Each structure stands twice: as structure tokens, then as C-alpha cells.
Amino acid sequence: IRDVAKAAGVSVATVSRVLNGNSTVADGLRADVERVSTALGYTPHAAARALATQRSMTIGAIVPTLQESNFSTGINVLQQRLNKAGYTLLLASSNYDQAEELQQVRALAAHGVAGMLLVGARHAPGVYEILSTKRIPFVNTWVLDEVHPCVGFDNHEIGETLANFLLDLGHRRFGVIAQESPQSDRAAKRVAGIHEALTARGVPPAQQQLIERSHTIVDGQLAFQALMETSPRPTAVICGTDTLAFGAIVQAASMGIRVPDDVSITGINDVEFAAHLSPSLTTIRLSADEIGQRAADYLLGRIEGRSVVAKTRVAFSLIVRGSTAKVSRKKR
Image (cartoon, rainbow, N blue to C red; front, side):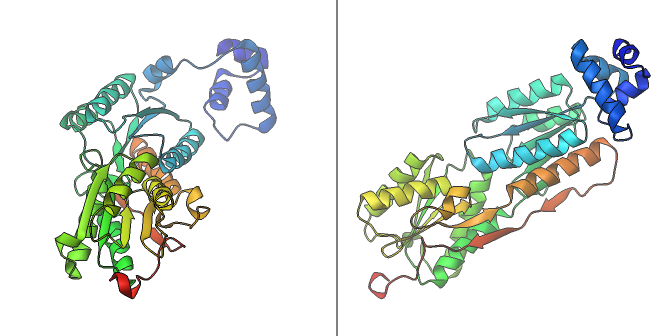
């Protein structure tokens, strides 16, 4: 850093402010320092900086998968917000495996992250022990957690909303294609919401069929086929993700089953393709970008010692499209 300062004709403090993203440095001076830094091949030494400041400039995030576009969207917004604050994001995917997630938490904690984002509230006990022992601020996302800091949706209410919408269309025979609940506490909450709404409206358990699969299009196809081979068939199928719903709609077409004339299908997430499917998908829109933004704000607030809200509820909305319709009288 002294070499950069000398070559640029500025103080070491000025170089430090530029490289730390401090906005008080004039644009022309900033450009000179950045040009010299690039020419000399200088980058700050993260470990040395952490020792000098007693604070790491990295934040960790562990998501179940990057195959779901909503997780990617949320992480993208998180990273943009952290970058503006001068932090670097370290990202890992647990593949819905608690043991793998625990290993990643250990690794990130050993790296000295200043904060950590997790998905869901169901983690191995060791996760919370490490975060507590290391005094690492963290936030659970995509879920409302009564015990720990969280930014998320009321997943129970999401299930209720979909079930009540279809009940209002006259449906009484239901199939549910959900992610395996040991993998996802969000899925378990949504299934519970569906079941409670149906039971409250007089739909007996015999008319509520649940199939738990993974989260791919093929899983949606296989589960939908199994539901349609039962008698009587469900007239409405609630899918735990848009991806599963895509599989259900594809399988319906291959079986000669008309959507929504023969069966209504819904999803959850409202990924971009949902509006362009034929028929377009009725789904729950989840604001992944807001999850990323609010999670970043919480972590930065904790790290910087500001007052923060420990529990943030993010709104969702029902998007009605062409894959749902009133049930025909002959199918009731």
C-alpha cells in the first residue's frame, strides 16, 4: 500500500479509503489510485486487514441449492448490497444436507466471516452452537422463526392461501406435490397450512393426497402421474414449487389431461417462465430480491452495532393465471 501511495503521489490513508470504497475521495483521485493499484498488481491482504481492524470484511451465505432461481435472485441482491458496503460474499450450497451445511458453517466461521445468512430454521444443533460461540451475527431466511433472527414468509399462510383459493373455485378433491419435509421446513409449513385450510372447509383426509418428492421437473411429472392414477382423481393439484408444477403440466399434456378443464394446477415462487407456460401458471409470488435486501440490511446493522429488527415478515401475493379454473359440476 505504501508503494501505491508513493507512485500515485498520495497518502497511505487515501489509498486505504479508495480501496475500501470510501465515497469521500474525489473521483479523479480515486481513478489515479485505482490505475496505479492495477498497474502494480496490488490487492489488499484480507487476513492482515482483519488482524489490523479486528473485523473481517466477508459475509457467508449457505443456500440449499442454486438450481432454484429464487435462491439465486436473493443471493444476487444480497451480494450487491454487501459490495456497496465494502464486504465480500462467500457462498456455499448445502444440497439440502444438514451434515454438509454444518461442515460449511464450520469452514466459514474458521475463515472469520463477520456475519452469515442461512435458509430455513431447521439446522443441525451444531450450527447454532458454532455461531453462538464465535459470536457471529446470523439471520434465517425464507421462513419466520420464533426463536432466531429471521427474514421470511409465513409459509403456513402460503399453504392456506392456495387451498382457500381452490376451494372457492369449487374444488373438493386435492392432490399435493411437496418437497420432502425433512429437507425443507418451508415445505412442511406449507403442507400444514394446506391441510388445515382443507379440513376447516370440510374436506376429509381421504380427499387430500400428498406425495413428497425432490424438486425437479421429473419429480413433478412422476408425482402427478401417480396422483392421476388414483380413483377418483383430484381436480386440483397444489405443487410446492413452480418447478414441480412445470413437471405436472408437462405430464398432464402427455397423459391427455386438460389443464385447467380436467385439473387445476398451482405452484409457488412465480419464476420468470411461469407466466409464459401454456397454460400460464397460477402461483404464489415470493419476493426473493426483498429477502436478499432485508437480510443484508440486518447483517450489516448487527455488524455495525446499529439497532435492527430481529423478525421481518415479507409479503407474498397470489398470481392467478390460466392453469386454474372453477371445477365443472360433473367432477365435483
